[in-house]
Length: 342
Ligand code: F6P
Image 1: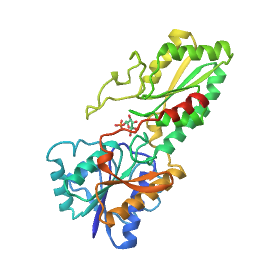
Image 2 (image 1 turned 120 degrees about the vertical axis):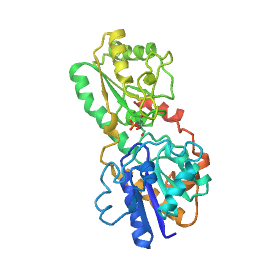
Image 3 (image 1 turned 30 degrees about the vertical axis):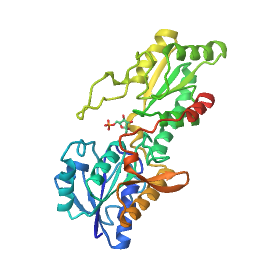
Image 4 (image 1 turned 90 degrees about the horizontal axis):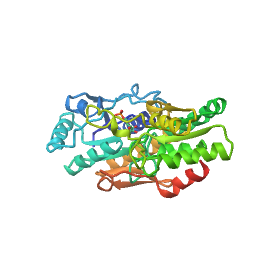
């Protein structure tokens, strides 16, 4: 291959720039042109594509966001989309593509690969809900942000004798909440995978405060979590331009319910995009570099339709057919740790 492309799509995640830099630098070293596709799939269709320079990728390993910019797109979800994308890639002279993205992006990658275009995926999502890989780029930084929030908010919770709730991201899976819940010693960890009732939660808080005589509690709830009776329904609000439910708010609903039922002072802090825009921690920078370096190798070797993945300490190529359309949920074992040691 003489020219390959790199695109970042879906929600940004800390470490994405480290992916772009790795792929570009492999190209510089081996005389293969690496073209950046700017503004994601819309940018591809409008021809917003150019060769990345050393200048472009200098000093970006530590930068959050993505120099290529990103977007959520419905391209590659409809019949004929793959042909449109392939025509645009051909026009730009791109012979193979590395897609850095989360669930939607890897499903798109699968569609493109099935249509015959050489594609390799790199897993990137703070939600860590991509199957086939132990971890995705951005997750560890997001979990660090949530852990720091729990650590800091403990002081205010204790000072004001409050129930402090932290709402983390995690649309369909509660990986951030569980990781931070364990690391930050949360008293309750609430995630989409595990049912809970408001009665059950309130009883646990009551026992902690009235029986164990603690004056405060720390709770972490993933934005997609919902109680069994659907009193807290995170999908109740408006939809975004892609008709996706706009999440964010379940923690505040929970605080109001706790105040109403128990009479304890409760407050919620929603972390939101602070988890996505944070400076990537070392482990995410290194993971991004390893996965992208491997993705480049796979493309060069003529592989397609696979995602570079982490299995234990090793890297492996996982077929996109096994990944597309699936969600990696928090395992019972891992959640059990949060229940006992959170
Ligand atoms: O990237 C995944 C995610 O962080 C989800 O946890 C969250 O619900 C979503 O992005 C929000 O994305 P946006 O508002 O940027 O579309």
